[in-house]
Length: 174
Image (cartoon, rainbow, N blue to C red):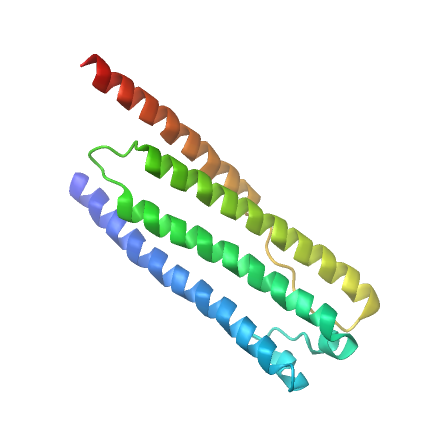
């Protein structure tokens, strides 16, 4: 059973790297395309994966920039979450999983997910408001259902903290 768990953790580590790199590509592509759109308004037509913010670019470059940069902020929090997961997967030891370092990483991950959720909510609200000024704007909302995941990770962090306390207590009594 222990070997299967170790293999599963290694597979998860590889998948986390793939996700991390994909998120960085997303954020980088958005930033580069946004930079190109300074001189080429048509670059806003296909920012990334068919995202067309050309109506916002035509209306006002400032509003367009806010939309793009809000998406980048969300991607940065996603990347920080993935990076923290990579650190958890690299640091976790099955012999003694309850370590304060892991609990702190899980708590940090929960905070990054929560902050990403706030940024996504702000983006969606701003986009909805901007649609009243630019009716042709087709800016799909960013998913905001991650708040549940942030709560779960936070609870896991607290469980790990308690596990550290119990493990330390058990070591002291032995």
